[in-house]
Length: 291
Ligand code: 0GY
Image (spheres, rainbow, N blue to C red):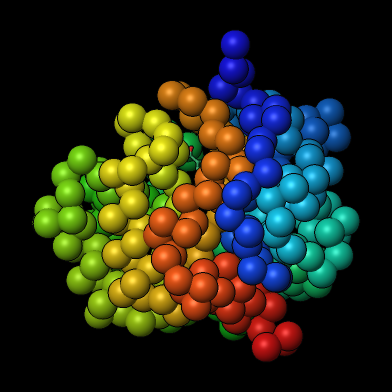
């Protein structure tokens, strides 16, 4: 029986060979809970997914680097994520979750460890609502550091969130293709609204990932392909890809990360697009000093 609260125990080595220097730009570490306790206000308790397992997966998948995103189950205590960044050396960058009263010293320490952005999470099933003014205060403190903002919402909330998203004077990375309902298709106003937003605001980037969450059918996620491909081809210099390991809150299946990697050439169909998606774009955003 597959345990949906634990990452895939035996991911396959992908058939697709990622280009040298590829970055998994969306993954997490969970705990271990006895060292890095989960937040009291969390909405779910994951199985532990420690940094060592993440680094092993990175190597198995043929990737060179990770961007580790603070997950809601750790609240704004970034200790597990920072510990993983430090252990990874220059092979990882981080996205933190911070409170509005975070100090300049705390931010400087995070920056030194490799944090390069903050995440604003609008999913009610994951977090309690944060006052909008708090997000504004966080943005005012972090954008001057050169950090960007990662936003997680679901497509029906986009209309309400648009004034806020477009007011942010920084690079804004939208998680998981804006979480469209893929059954509605590419011609539906929901998807067109997202495309119009991306068209009008060149500071917006998007993660072209998460077929395992967007699909109600499961692998091989055929009906998610047109959405990912549309974004990669329209915004080749503003797309990122990530595994989302260890895949919290999956209800249908636990994805094999090797198979998720094999999804990449179906949405990025040329070597040039793959190089942009997996190397050039994430390096520009997270390791600009190496460019
Ligand atoms: C993801 C997606 C989810 C969870 C979180 O912070 C989180 O807990 O992001 C989800 O449940 O959709 O990106 O890991």
